[in-house]
Length: 182
Ligand SMILES: *[C@@H]1O[C@H](CO)[C@@H](O)[C@H](O)[C@H]1NC(C)=O
Ligand SMILES: *[C@@H]1O[C@H](CO)[C@@H](O)[C@H](O)[C@H]1NC(C)=O
Ligand SMILES: *[C@@H]1O[C@H](CO)[C@@H](O)[C@H](O)[C@H]1NC(C)=O
Ligand SMILES: *[C@@H]1O[C@H](CO)[C@@H](O)[C@H](O)[C@H]1NC(C)=O
Ligand SMILES: *[C@@H]1O[C@H](CO)[C@@H](O)[C@H](O)[C@H]1NC(C)=O
View 1 (cartoon, rainbow, N blue to C red):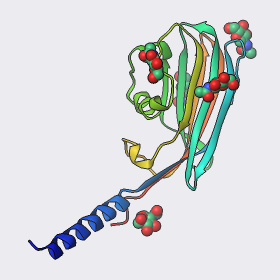
View 2 (view 1 turned 135 degrees about the vertical axis):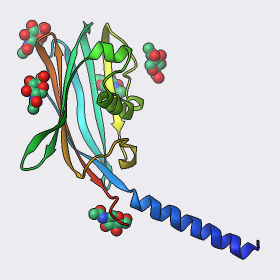
View 3 (view 1 turned 180 degrees about the vertical axis):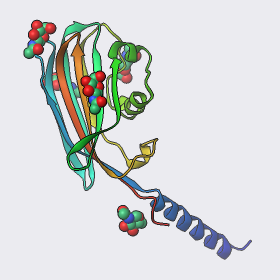
């Protein structure tokens, strides 16, 4: 094979790769992040915010300090999808936070945890007191390992110690899938 046809093959290869890339392109963007109902006996929240780093990309940061030793907590997570207001969508899960930190369980929670753990210090186990942070979390559409319809979503997560709510977090994101360019 001559040099010219090698170059042609390369050009063809990159064109196909580019086209495949755009066929599978999808966009993920955090649009809102709030932390409220903070019980300051248990938790101090230093930072809870989104930051735009470039067009179409936002990062999420949470920085808090657990002020009293926690040896048991419960997490209630629910996903909503926008359709004339946010409506419950697919998942409504309550799980044992300390058990999860010991050994992750519940598939949808594992998916979310896998996306954020490298941005966090969430590698401790209970009992725990001290810093808790997720800094500069960003997600690109291609990292979402499950099919997700285009839309706006809200993940509401409530954190409890026995019956006491000590933090309520709401994360909104927009997701746009694009498999339709064939
Ligand atoms: C899908 O991707 C193609 C190629 O990148 C783009 O031209 C088109 O606007 C996209 N469609 C939607 C609905 O995003
Ligand atoms: C905050 O937590 C403390 C200790 O568990 C509890 O006594 C108090 O009632 C909580 N405050 C609220 C507003 O829930
Ligand atoms: C979190 O906030 C505390 C208090 O402001 C600060 O000392 C600490 O460095 C912050 N942690 C991170 C990871 O930014
Ligand atoms: C979700 O689960 C919580 C706690 O188990 C329950 O109170 C709530 O009604 C559920 N919501 C829906 C829409 O099923
Ligand atoms: C958690 O991660 C930090 C930083 O990567 C490391 O220094 C620490 O030893 C880890 N702790 C545990 C319990 O694995």
